[in-house]
Amino acid sequence: MEPFHQRLLTATQPIWKGILAHPFLSAVADNSIDEAVFKTWMAQDYLFIQASVPFLGVLLAKAPVHIRPMLGQSIVGFNSELELFRQQATECGVDLTNEPTPTCHAFTQFLMATAYDRPFEVGFTVLYGGEKAYMDAWQHVKAQQQGVSPWQPFIDNWSSAAFQGYVDWIATTLDALAAEKPEHVLREMEQHFLYTARYELLFWDMAQSGEQWPG
Image (cartoon, rainbow, N blue to C red; front, top):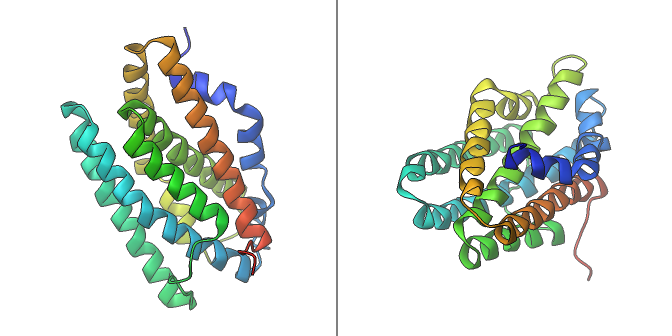
């Protein structure tokens, strides 16, 4: 029987291919990304990571005891990422105080609603979806890179061996959680993974298009 995390990836393969083939990532890899587009992504992803800290906090409160230490380290890691964004924003002149776009707002609301309202294993599945998407995306960028990027710190952050180890831990832990659950729970976990993958794809679209609220 295939591991549960592989079942999730198999079920969302078309969306996953769309994530990796997105023009935003291709442009980062070949150094053709428009600076304004990348700065839009920076500002919005900063807001998303800010919202991810309380998401992890709620998961931590619900987590089985043996999972709590690593989730606590995850919060430390997210705060380190926020500092990376602040440093890069200062160097590049990016305003991190703008309001979230519709996609960013919807994605962060989805995070919090899942963390509060759904069982722990469903929220943990969403965590896996988001972290796996970023690892695959930025490792793909690094593999396709044509010279050093002005945005290299971001590429290196999510393509590192340390981040690979963290995502592997989430996958292994998720498999163990899934082994104890009935099929109807597994289907809910799979549905939320699908939502997460869709949001990840929409997030690249948002940055590329310069999405704004009407009015």
